[in-house]
Image (cartoon, rainbow, N blue to C red; front, side, top):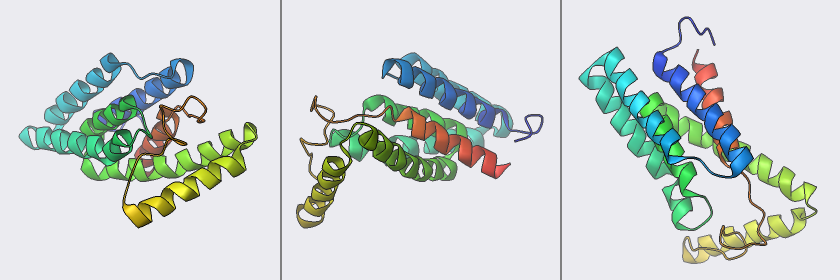
Length: 176
């Protein structure tokens, strides 16, 4: 990425993504203040660069970012901070780029989850649980799984801001 020609909103997205990843890795939380700052920055920078059209871009991007991982939060497979982080990134990046970020983040998250499970000697158990979850979803539709829930103290958890940040960086750098 050439920082001299990057859009200010893209720079804000990269900064937000890195800050959230570092914070989530250290504390396992993404502060609301960081997310709010990201939404405000995304809105202001998009308005500054494109006027009213920029505000629509930020609003629709924020809505798309919020909605893309909301089902996983509702099923207790993802934390609320991750959902709000995607909303803030959507305000910066717009709808298409935040959906692309979610796709890349999902792939990166799967790789990270497999690595963490392998490191903890739980790869077979984790993959089996994921397989049972997906099979159940195919038969009965999406339902929470106690084995893979954030509410289960025995379940392995990853700081999902890391794959989200990877996705955002990949999309921003690929676009430049």
